[in-house]
Image (tube, rainbow, N blue to C red):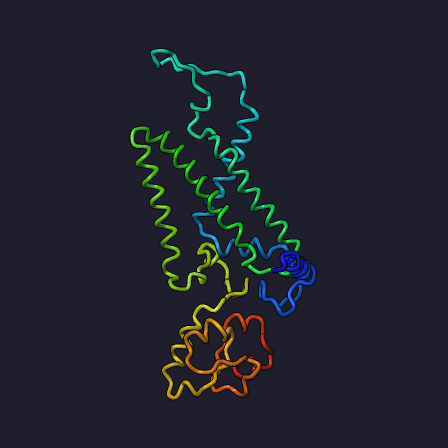
Length: 287
């Protein structure tokens, strides 16, 4: 065990990725790119991978965060409110009169979650090498922030318009949102990475905007070839051949660079977008 050497390699490799960018071609916004694909890569990637419900929740969360800040700054600290309807005229905080008044937890948690996501996004944009998977750490904080935004909005609306059954109303509306989220994801089963934001799909083509395909679907090609005669004696050259393809292929997988020695070739969208391993190979077979 060599912890110092291991940490040194991690930081060295991180610096290399940040400075040098992509060593092979990268596909973004309809173009092949080398090096840094640009500042818009991560924001667009997030928009494609998130859901309409999360986006609405984030808008609500940002609104409540700003409202909380304004409320705390402008509220007179000496103001006190007495409930004249109560027999003992108990004192109440003035925030209780406002159905959308800030909650102590959300007042701290929302800015923290949103601030972390923004700071992480800015720091990751400093690096020249960019992949959508590098942005994974911000999804859970932003989903949580969106959930808080929805929760505060539903709670405030139920207090204002449904005072008698506000808990059941908020619970029912929350259930509808959860079902909506599931309804967007379940149609992509079992390849959940093929989900893309339906709001963007209405006006844009994801295959033009970003690199797609992380091996999903190669199992189908492997299962098809597995039904061919004498498959164990055959060789197949496939993108991501050692892994998503080879797990389901009983024959011999080889690299695409050995295409002339293979019995079968399996091309993949990721590979075609980046024109890998060579453009001439794609032109030869994909006319």
